[in-house]
Length: 195
Image 1: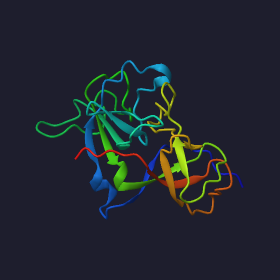
Image 2: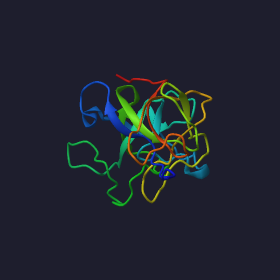
Image 3: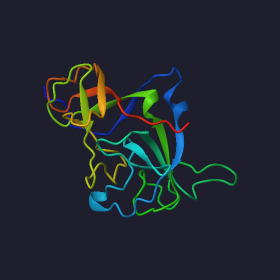
């Protein structure tokens, strides 16, 4: 039976340091992405790999050094006095992504790439083995998410830049790694740490 085609970016599967992954979330301000309009590439979606640009978060492209994966997005004004920004947009509670039109004031919750293993879908029949490398499908000026759901549509594809390494197969009855849209557990190969 064919695998379900349901790309949803990178989802945290396991912590590599023993702590629950929810305790690993770090807060970053998003960079001004308002000029990155082609196919809404400047949007930041839940499940997007992200990189740093001058200390601020931007959507990562294949070949970039990966900071981590976005797990939450909020906007200035989503706070109570003397508390940090929350993960929502107070002007539009249905918005679950960081819009590129919000040039400033966007905060992103990021799981560090070096501290977790992530589940992701392949974009085609890759027949990857454990230890094989692959690339993320996000490149400059390409769409990589849904403004309706707020979720990333990033997948993995044939390796050129060796962005990720397969560490495990997803072992569910409905996942066939010999077919398209297979799900893998991966770690990022080239990462950065801001601490």
